[in-house]
Image 1 (tube, rainbow, N blue to C red):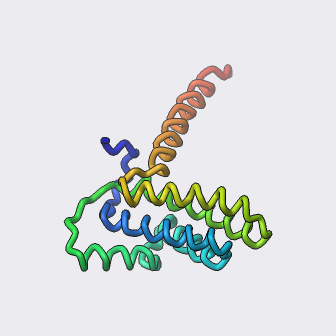
Image 2: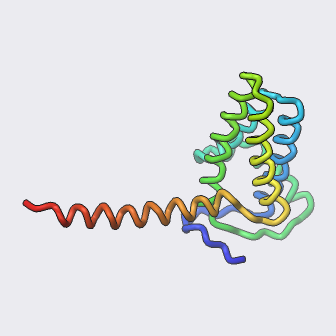
Image 3: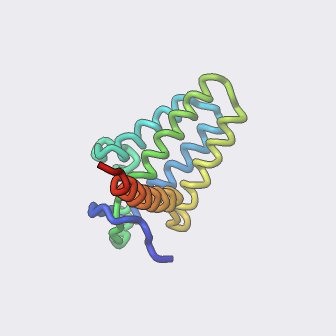
Amino acid sequence: MAHTCPIEGTKLNEPTVRVVALLIAITASVGIYYQSSILFIFLASDFFVRGYNLKKWSLFRYIGIKTVTFFDVKEKLIDAGGKTFAAKIGFIISVLLTLFSLLHLPLAVVTLGGILFVFAALESALAYCVGCKIYTMYNAILFKLSFLNEGAKGTVSK
């Protein structure tokens, strides 16, 4: 399937992204099993640094880079726009998971954590980025709204 994310210009190595997604899936599943707010705080912090351009502080990214280097996986560059947006969604989900675990709402943790796990597993196993699809729809909506806004400005009488 062709990559359809709007282009940001910054590039990421897809094999590294897939290793990071595997680490997220593992951490999320352990966090769900133990209802661990500590693991969800860790996920939130790692998503935050990757989503808000502080990538050098991401432990998962560091492990992903080292893993890809160790196994000498061929580099495949992809645009970072959708992945950055997906990290921001992951941050929000992880904050909610932290809150739900602190409030002792196990059904909410399992449900939302399961969604995070599935998204991460899809990225890791199939290189299918749900966040990228949402990012594409989000940008399409913003684009259409900008035209509606411009049209509304043009109809205002002076």
